[in-house]
Length: 380
Image 1 (cartoon, one colour):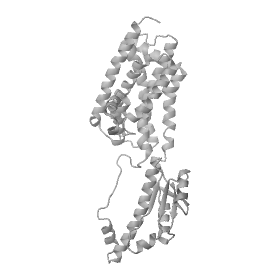
Image 2 (tube, one colour; image 1 turned 30 degrees about the horizontal axis):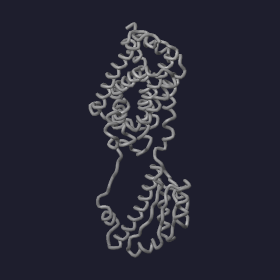
Image 3 (spheres, rainbow, N blue to C red; image 1 turned 45 degrees about the horizontal axis):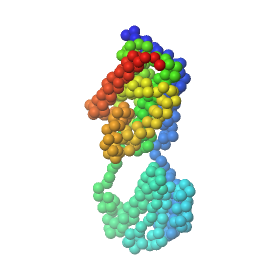
Image 4 (cartoon, helix red, strand yellow; image 1 turned 180 degrees about the vertical axis):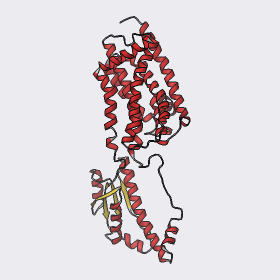
């Protein structure tokens, strides 16, 4: 216990005396918590600028343009006479979509025919493409439904009968776990898990690099006591950060939050231990401070893609998918999202939970072994 307490105190002094490590382990966590969600607060992209090419100039075509402009996802900013001019506006970034209304649009419809309007969207930006296409489709669909209902009323049906005939099986959509269907609720909670992992790994690596540069012994206690004492310090610190992220940040910014505190704490324990022991094991590879930052920052983007929330896991090669489970963030993101945003129980994420416990045990043994070998190695 004496060696355990000494290792805990030594690690605390090392962090307090290293401004870089303090900035990563405390400052960066707080800065990300306050500022990372801010750009995503609007949640849903609205009022995508659109350009209209109206070759018909009829009452019905103007009605369609008005309906499009009143849709929350579209803002009609330009009306030009040719499709080439409209395309130039999209290429210049001044519009995200084009609505092309053909000649004789109203005349064709009044004769009982079917008119075709052209819709073009900028697919270079996925969110712009999705929102513009949705806005165009809903505005055109609303106009089409109104025309069809009036035709049915002309046959003698009442307005209620015409609406029922037009839509005999109405679709009612209720998003369960992302009510706003927003990008922030989708992306930010997952990234918070990655921030916990990466800042912890980088902070441990920085301290190890500093000790190596100064040729200091980072674990003066026995290897076992030193490993456990250092891990206890980081666990205490990051337990506070985890509480901040999933107890305060998700509530302050209004993200879905259905997780039970005790369940989240039980899941966070093996996640943090796995990350801590992984950091202690690999930190001995870094002999310079800069190396830790360069190497571990490089792993952030692969960790995001391999986690399976920004890219479908089914589309990832099997070998990479299996290898991704060596990173605690892969099981950690999946588990935290299901617990906090879907209200899952611990039993429902038992695979991820047991995976994290397995990683925690494996990385603890590795960190202990590395510490023992480092202690027994002759001084350089």
